[in-house]
Image (cartoon, rainbow over all chains, first blue to last red):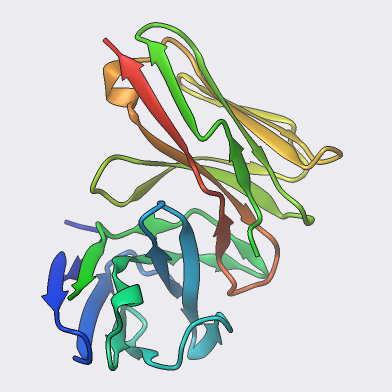
Length: 115
Length: 112
């Protein structure tokens, strides 16, 4: 069984469209994340979600919105897509211990291409 | 802001040789972790070293941590072609749900 699964793996769309990426983890972790990896492979955290507490990276445009229907799911919705949104988006999960972050388990990534 | 900075950005060695990658960071940490990413895949956790630890081993991996210099190194001994990948260090800065802050990575190529 895949621990962290995200769909779709590839997404090609036009500028201005709205799209969603889904993520599910079956590890029983209490914290989930979305990371963006750019063309130079730099990984930047976008959101983390823990027990209904949402931490947003202040540099993320408000066109991006995470939605968590339950502890095992954290979906990413993107409005009005722009060329610069093209990247690989990774979902991850971990089990927090106080303020300590342990090992992250990553999905396989969703490659978004905006034309 | 960028926390981890890996050095070198790219490394090419012959199979069987040892590969050493370095990571520097700027703020205090709870722990430092190393991840591997094969081309087109997700990141896979390799090893975690806590701020009160100085060295840790896992199979062919050896990680050191020097908190006074805010640096870590990852040594892969007896490299194999399958070790070809990008390697990232990541720091837990104790921000609770802030997750890990990743460096830019070292792309390692093992020549057969």
